[in-house]
Length: 448
Image (cartoon, rainbow, N blue to C red; front, side, top):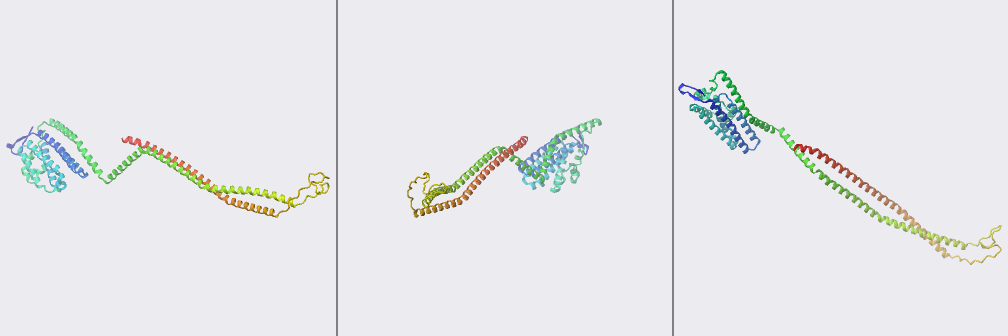
């Protein structure tokens, strides 16, 4: 324990600097923790990126200032600066943030009011009453003068020594400033003091190292939030989101692709079968349509052949009749000279014998000749009609046969072409599906 004396000798009182240091560390930790809770409440009621950024800024500024002050080598000055920090923060929220943010800032303001009261209670318990009253007077005088919100926000948390040395409070804080320079190591031997200072420096380094990760985490979060609010980063996030959705969609499609390929293959086969059936039915219908003319043509051809047969029979009969007519109208053959048969001799009768008498021939009948001419004329007309009908029917028959053959060839070619394309498309679709599934399966496995 080191006694700190300010003013006259009769005002001398002892100050336990080790106890003050412990109180400073506890108060700094309490400030950081309670402000963190207040900032959490603030962001819970204001779920916006601006609110998160403001809360992180409050956390970082408060933590860095509180830990910096707590690491001072002079504990009384550190305690006074923590009280000044709480008073400043309360005043800033009363004059600036509460009018700007409204009731959303009320939890943070109430925390600073409570922290100021706790800090003043720590001063009352660690310093003599006289010094405690001087500290309160200095803070009240400064608070009464700090009325400009913008200036107050830009100036930052002040040091208590600057507040006590300025204005009307300078005449009331002389003894308080006198104990700011008290160091618990001043009463030690030089060698012992240097060893103690080295140990104290190590303790402060450990103190800051233990509390630094939380501050670093807040700064990282703040940097990330500000980076995410940049237009280029928002565009990048949007692109990544769209890419992620596209990958998910592709993965979902790859999962259902085999089934869909099977369904599509069935549809293709059914379509091919239907097309082939339609082509076959069309071919049959075309043959049915051409069957009528073909049957008519065959009937006409048959009639022509029958007419030709009848003509042939008529010509045969006509020839026989003409031969008989010629035989009737011509006389008996005269014998030839030089040993030919005698006149009037019948063939097959030996010479010298009388020929048998032949029955008299039928006399010439003009009616039969007229009938013969009529039959020949009718036969010729029928033959002409038959030839003309055959001439007319043969081109139509040839065209019908050619058209039917061409349609059959086209139908068969179309059916084969459709079947080949369907098989090629099915094989390509199955191959593409297998490749896509093999390519996307490792990615999903890595992502999982």
